[in-house]
Every structure is written in C-alpha cells, then in structure tokens.
Image (cartoon, one colour):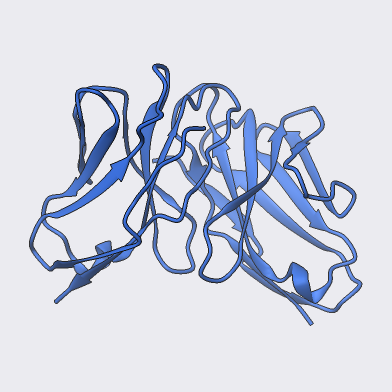
Length: 115
Length: 111
C-alpha cells in the first residue's frame, strides 16, 4: 500500500510553545489529507480536512487559530499546535488520499507531550 | 456517515479464523464498508473495503449480507500480530469525504 510518513514521531515541548508536525505522502500525490487526534483508550477524532492549495475545513469544536494546518503541496501537510498546553498532549495522526481512490492511508502518528 | 455497531472486544485462538461482526443498518446505497485496524500506538492500517459483493485480499475476507445491513471481517488464520483494534466504517469516501471512526473491536489473539 501507499506510504505516509509523519515527523517527528515523538515530541515533548513546554507549555506555551508551538509545535509543528509534518505529514508526507511518499509515493503518491494526495489532494486531500486529514488530521486526527487520539486520546488514550479512545478512538480517533477527526480534527480537520486539508485540501492542497485551499484552507482547511475544521470539525466542530476544533479551534482553527490554535491548530494551524497548511497543505502547500500535493505531498506535504503540516499541523502546528500553537501555544500548546498540557491538555493538548495527545497522539496526532494524519492520513492521505490519492485523488479519488477509496482508501485512506495513515501515517504512524506523532505523540505530543506538553509539560 | 452511517453509524456502525461493533462488539467492544473479542478473543480468538492463534491459528483459528477470527470473525469480526459489524452492524450498519442505516447504510445508504452509495456507501462502502471499510475495515481498518490499529495496533497499539500506531496509525490505522487499511484492511479491505466493499460495496455489496464479498471481497478477499491477502489480509482478510469481507462478507456483506445481501441487505447490506451487516458485515463480517474474517482473518482466516489469526496470528499474535493480528492483536489490534478493528474499526468498521461506512461512507462513500469519494473525493474528500471523511471517515468517522467508532469505538471498534479490540481483538486479542491468544497463544
């Protein structure tokens, strides 16, 4: 299957700082990428849908000014957690779709810990 | 997306077939059934999807009832590496339509 990478895999930051997470589709072009968040023992919760060259669509309750998403190319989307707080500590996962294919391919996830 | 119902947990002996059920009684005509799994602390992995016909690939088989209101994912010879949370999701998934994850079934393969 297609490969999606995320960087970094783990990050620890201090409260009040910003953290950027990258999501790359390595062997296909992704017109659409998705960002999810997963708290311990819970399911994945969609945060936003990102389309290349346009603004992201955020799910209800997700602050667009806090979680900045940029999808500048067909192989890269970034999620920036601004002014991070301990409650933002979570497992962040991206996924990418190759055009109008039916499968979504997921990255390995980034574990963010805010101290 | 239509709602799905899955048992919260299941056990299966190593080497036996694991049969994971999913109810999706409100599925609409253009919606597919997708199965993903998530091994601890990893991103979800695509397994299989289908519309109305049964499907098989190198990982699993998907059996969809004729009325499409339920389906079963079959792992024919379960191994310890199949221990994971399995998610059944329905959606058209065309274009940028999103997938909505439910709570899934935690499958434990027992040696």
